[in-house]
Length: 355
Image (cartoon, helix red, strand yellow):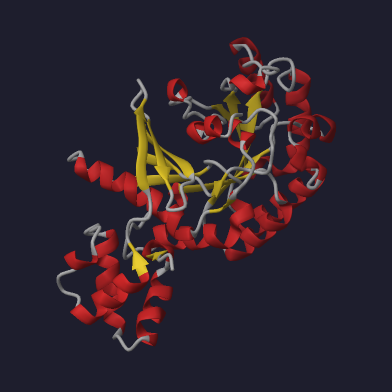
């Protein structure tokens, strides 16, 4: 029987699991401290935990379930980790060095079924969801890398924007968030975590009701249904009206700002009339809305698209600003190693499948 990753348990789940097996509540605090503060990778290194507890943990869990496959570093310092899962599947995780700290982009699924026509991540259909432990371990493996490099910095920001649709793996994604937020462990603040969705409206409502104080980003990429359906097939199931209604509910429930992600595709969605239409769509919700304009990153299999000219991006930005919409143009990182927005994929697996 394949053992589960211990990183998949929230603190409360670990406490309950140990107490159900006759151990005192304080054992969970000890184990948690070793995992996330001291960051050991072997149960035997937990020197203040008794032998019976350690043997029990080792019988049921592993600390490391991912193995290094390839690591690439960009000229800008971005590092892309290709990890191999225990079943042989490959996933990607990206470490970005930002002005505000170390940011990690995590993957939530093996492959992706959303099928956005401009995105490399959907070139491989979804094989399975990642467990919460496999998602948490991506953070831990990056943190271990920083530790091994003698870097005193810790992972301070997380974006759930890697391969897959996070809201299609909702329960595991929420457990992951609760683990990394826990103040007794990694203590990554909710305001430093952003979850992105392609617009699964029913899950946006559910996410709002959880009141996790996590940042939400919605991949919109078009201001009307006709255009959005053309580039994002998910729009057939969740048209713009449903997405906007869900976002409005999220704002009212949490009083938190949301970000609309908008990829800039030359002569597709980058005209000033599209900017005006987007501003009208946002309308009265502009107070809690931010638009992130993303220069398109080339993907060889999607050669029907090109990056918008700098002038077109600037004109789009200026139009939104004139309409009172808060917006910015994303600074890209890791493009030279296919680690930038929209480029993530397990290239080695893709080649093995002959695609």
